[in-house]
Length: 257
Image (cartoon, rainbow, N blue to C red; front, side):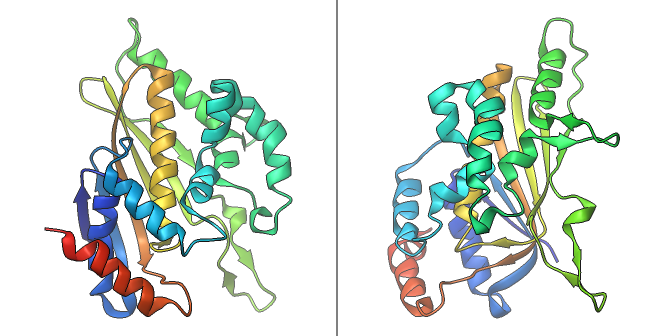
């Protein structure tokens, strides 16, 4: 079964998804697809929802989760160099010291990869270069071949009894598409699993920043964002489920039309 939610803003789409998950058995769904029309905008509701949920996400607030997908702080400080060089070469080695990042970050995988010959690659930089070649005056306008495989076969750990163990990353794949007129770029993210209370808003923000970066660097407009979670779970914080659910309903869900 496929469930689809559409919203103009990140928070609008998130709230609609939360409503669906709230009515689902055990607050979970397979194949939840979210489409956000204007993910790179920041509405008053976006800020209110993010501020509210950060009260519960003290260890990994929305912006911290977003930074694991795209290093916006380095982009602000150093422009494109901060993304392409400062983050992977200077910041990432420090970030990886934390236990939560032992298997890496999405941002690093998007910026550094390894090809079949063992050579280091730069997936995001390569995508931007190829998009620019297609949208320039001599481009052939190829719209549909800009992919980043975030998950790798070696990410699945196998225990001694032969059973697969869930491991990083939850986000598996990124697909950039150009609009038919080649004036905008859209982004689709595929998640093996996505946790809607603890991570989804941060995921949306990080992906929106990534999309904005690609648009800026290619001279295109940022388009829509689609997140397809093959498994979605509304994971209220342990011990605070009733409080969080009541506040969410009172402050946001009951206001939705």
